[in-house]
Image (cartoon, rainbow, N blue to C red):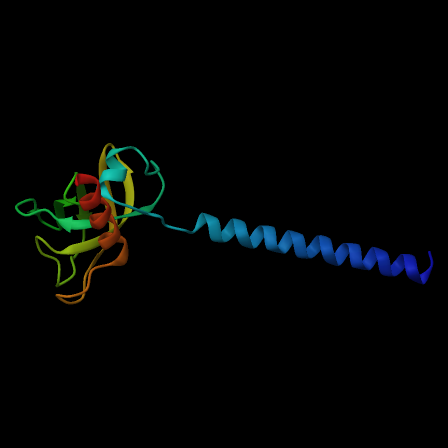
Length: 141
């Protein structure tokens, strides 16, 4: 082979390696994403089953039930409610009527949360929760 042919083979291998690296990177990033769904979207069946995602809204007033370390409560976007089960210690700011985001998956029609995040002050609302509440408000009008 001539020098030119050797260079062309090397360039071809470099391009193939770069394409492979980008493909693997995109696959890894895509499998680690947690998409946000509102209670209405989950009720409509838009959320994946058996796969981790985020669910958020306002903690429904009167829905919090504690038994040992397990807490059951409902999250609402003022249109639909969805039941959540969480085992662990809740954030200090968790209370009824507050905006929260949970991470977990659907198990037999109940969202089993692995993490619960509460808003950090009285003025802050997680952007996803605010958008979901705004969409619900607009659809009711």
